[in-house]
Image (tube, rainbow, N blue to C red; front, side):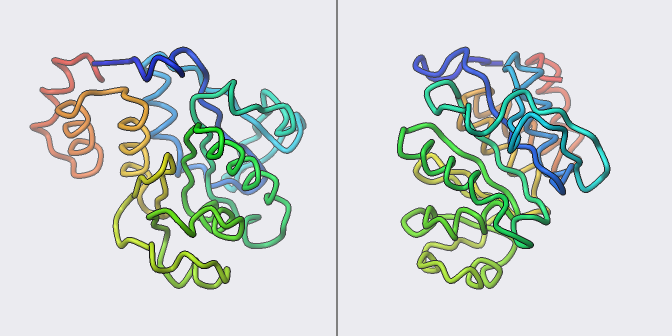
Length: 209
């Protein structure tokens, strides 16, 4: 297993955005594997006040969004949440994602967070995916021609995925940060996405379980 990333970002934490109604299941594979590979995960909320996931989990953010700087981070992960479509409360997280991308620091967005990025114009010039194309089209964004029918897509430092693809989402994040080599990453995906028992031996040998 290769638990290093690019020299410029080695040792910097991965930041997971947390906010009320966040979808618990969408980022668990990614954060668990990153943590097991020795990467620090820090949560960032609208403030440091506790939030509740859609599953009722109470989460106390490590820091507030206003205090997050791209240069202090290896990656910003944005999970889906009911609030992405119900109000403009999470728009500041999309704006922060824009800061990250302009600074050359990657962002990973899944489910409703992709709509937030679409509204911010961040998908107009990058290949991307989401739940379905018409979900993003409803935002009025200009990037419909770059929509890709795929489990997950990485382009220009941005990972996108739909709500039913947490494993593919995690795969792209692990690849982006160089957590596993290609053989181990493929085995990890086959085990957790396809229940391929033959992949277990590869992961066990690599110490990736």
